[in-house]
Image 1 (spheres, rainbow, N blue to C red):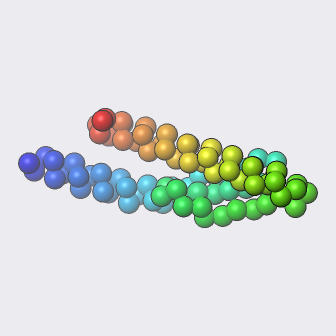
Image 2: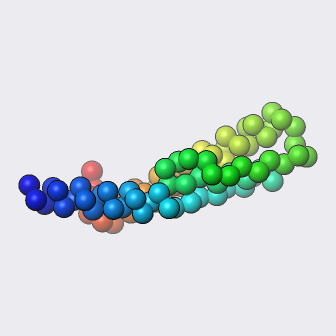
Length: 84
């Protein structure tokens, strides 16, 4: 039982440290930055692009940043012996 509590505490500590992570992606002058909670922290648009292109690129940037954060989290968990 204490081993499980210890693992939960370790996971909480990892989660807290992961909140500080940040992933940024830029495509065609559109920039999106996401933190480890997958909250968007910053968006910069490219005024040379039309609105529809910017909307599509913002989605692409966010999805790529999200995927990168999730891969880093999974790698971190696997390296820590928390394979599920």
